[in-house]
Length: 293
Length: 287
Image (cartoon, rainbow over all chains, first blue to last red; front, side, top):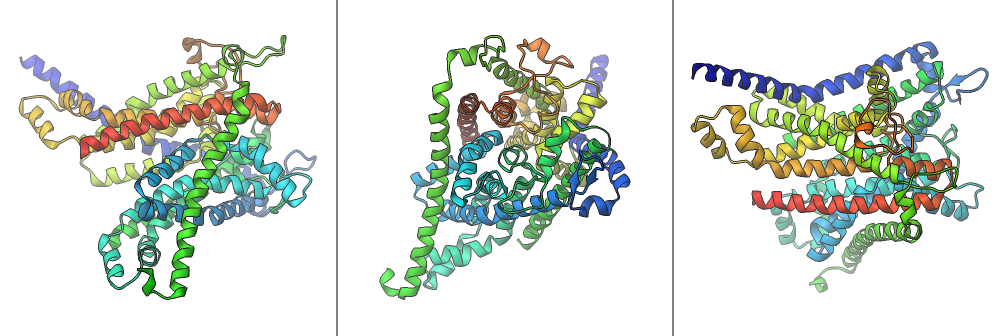
């Protein structure tokens, strides 16, 4: 009996330790990812110099005298993301308001189902449709020699961020207290005026969360963008072939070596820091929202 | 009721309503358009030969059976790794953890993991598993990478479900003399099975649709493998998504790409249905 109890105790301690290990695993992973990226990304930045690396406007990694400026990628990522947010947020927000406050039950279920499905479609499939539909359309509509450019990437990205913007916005719109609506209605505002004049402003910080989530998604997207953006390291032009931070990493990785390869890790490091900053802002907003409640 | 408000207000209300319906309509139209177009372009090329053979240069035929199998292996291997870890982490957070600050840090880390783009997972997976652990470009390295990537999903859904297990169950079990681990194994986890299943389904969707994280970890080979070969280090294999990318971008064989896209779409649809069913169950339990 005593022996059994001791055995049981040992199992208990062992399992407790095991669960603890699983628990801190995410911390460990984040730390490891950071360490790996720092260790492989910093050497190249040291060699090139931070200034030339971040603000150099010429990327010529395979030239006889290589130049490793990533400003074209940085700006393309910023412009591309900004464009996608600009195009996607109004549509997403309007759709979310419709779902949260207006939709008859059946229509709501249908639209919500559509949003869920859109969220599940793999990014290569978006890329394929973009390549075959959006790129030729952009080419013909604007009379360009090639439609694989920043605009096509923005269109595809805008569609891809819609689901996250819609579902997060819908959730926060639903969380706005009923009393706000009732007060507004009692003062004589119509239902639509109430929704747009009271409910949407009240859900402001939550909607910001949704937008920033969209930013994170757009900044990090690689495959779909690679298939529609043309993938040439130009400074960003709406109708020019461009390369994003993500696609810069992906497109040269398979054949690179030496300093060129190291630089790709540095680009990944920049992208990682970018995403961390986005996450940080997200957290600050969420925490501020919680405090206000 | 609209009789009592001014024409300007009425116009504004009308405009906003119209815009809202337009946006919702656009979203539906997008989905219908994408699905319709994919079906139209892809379905004619889904033939028995395509899904039941491997590509042959000699005969000049294209087959995607290896890619289908690789996707299945990758899903299985990823789940085998991520399930114990994710469920364990959620159990720790909900049943064991007492230190508030540690729980907050773990939560923050989990969120950070969830926000990292898949291309970075691919890169770090290559550095860590392919090179550092010396697994070579292999399905195994891909599965490990995806396991880290899907960990936040499994943790979150399991934790949600664990929170719905009534405290009295735990007290009953402990009161009857069960140890903590015994209680978790026989009472708590079985009650949280729906959350675990939801986590599984969402992970399957994520793994099946993932591409950027696999490009440099799982490789691009199109050879047939059985499950045992697939989980050995050094055996590369391309999944359906990578195959789609290669056929569309590198070889310009769009018919095959569209056929694969239809298969991926069907998979997405199934995963969605399953996730809805599981979530419905979870809701019922709560309500």
